[in-house]
Length: 109
Length: 112
Image 1 (tube, rainbow over the protein chains, first blue to last red):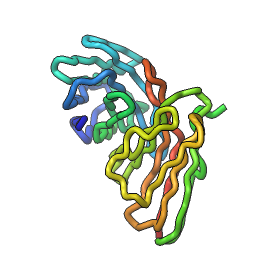
Image 2: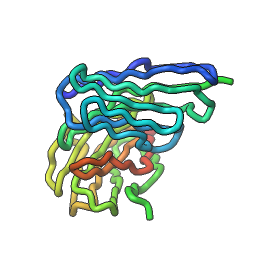
Image 3: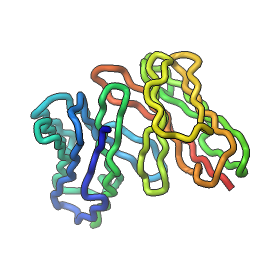
């Protein structure tokens, strides 16, 4: 069974600091995704990572994928309050997309 | 305009009732999903369909019955609702390669 582990589950950061969220998965997979969810809202896609060594960046967020280690990271640079949300990684194995437990990020001034 | 739309957005009902949630996508995707998000925000896959065919049925009580009349629709019917069914239910759709899944706005189900 495809399992996805994410850590930390809770992250409180000061504005301007850097931090990394980790996502491990249990079996080989075709694709890895990062999503953002604001309170009371739906999930919004941030990144799609399709191959080993893939790196994508959008603003203060950068995601990478190491398929050999079955590990993806979401790096936050110089956090700002607007980044406060829950971040999920998800792994897709042909019609079967499983999510990590989510990282609830709070950025404090 | 909405890519994946669910109705209703909120649903409050009594234990023992039967209810349905509807989902439609206008993206032309072949695969659709139902997820349950509990109070701790954990997202659990319930069902996936590809071209109207059930692919994943993830140890969901048989009170839950998905129905896909066509590729654009995946509805969820729930019989004999229980308190533990209270959650947010998300519908999603995706194409086989290489895009991400797109999610509906969610249906907050409260069983009283």
